[in-house]
Image (cartoon, rainbow, N blue to C red; front, side):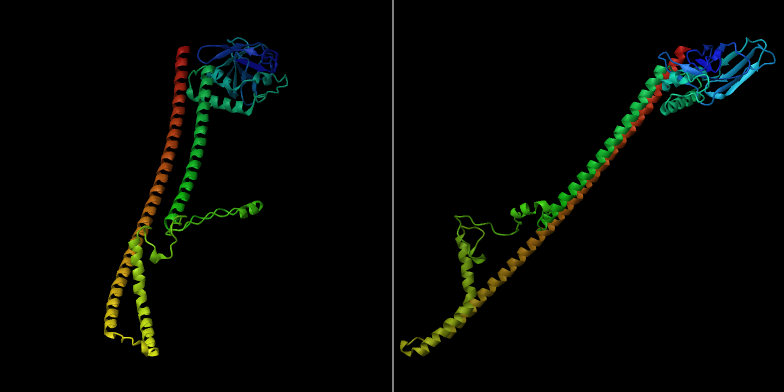
Length: 407
């Protein structure tokens, strides 16, 4: 620790020429100087072996060395960091102009505050005009903030702290913990964005599946830009899917003429013949009167043919029998159509329920994934905070152990 001021005894604001204080017991530093009477400005400076220095912050200290008679002994006491408290006491028993720096925390500030004051030795030597009135000339704002933080921490400790190396280790641990917390925040934001994109993609896929299940075709592709209109026109659009349409006929397959002549199995001839008979039965009510009318006209126009009379009773009985058969067939067709409609409706209802259940399950799964990701990020952040607290506690314990070892 040095006392640097505006007179020869204080080095004329030169750090190297300033008065060097000697450490006493406890937190006291002292030096004896021969000073001329008058008011002198000075500051206390902590130096490190690497050449860096930490100047007191605040206004310059003022030492009034005036006395009733020249050369009268006097004593000045002050506390490091509190530039407003410089007490000057006249004492005939003390050596001439003894400057004593004491109080709890004075020696402790020499170790911790020097950590954030690298490079102040050049700014400290501001010349004899007192250019270092704030004690921080040549130092950056970050160094000043670090020095304030260290001074407050040491003021609360009220004991001899760790060395400058321990303070540097503590600061490095705090910086590493802060970087870790910032990295966790970035990872949390990236994970949240990824989850949101996955949820949007999942909802889009579910919407497309629901549309396909209800019989609607997927949405058409986006329209091409103006520069690619000609190219888009030359490309034919994809075929729209048709649900329930028959399979296309191959080159070897026979040509199908209609649904009455087509069976579910192309090789099932019995089903095709049955449908042909059904068609003929349906046409008989039309063909029979035509045939009877033609027969009567022939018998009238050509009596020489001696055509037998028309058996009306037999025809009536055959027509009634045919009508009963057609009625039974028609009732069977209606029952079959109703059954097929009910089956189709049940299939559609089951598909809708399945799609709704799938959508709900997917939404619940996405919500669970988002909740699990949020919990994981929160646990990581909590773990990082606990790690920072543990590192700080470990650093404090190391400082206490070092203090005990020094004593």
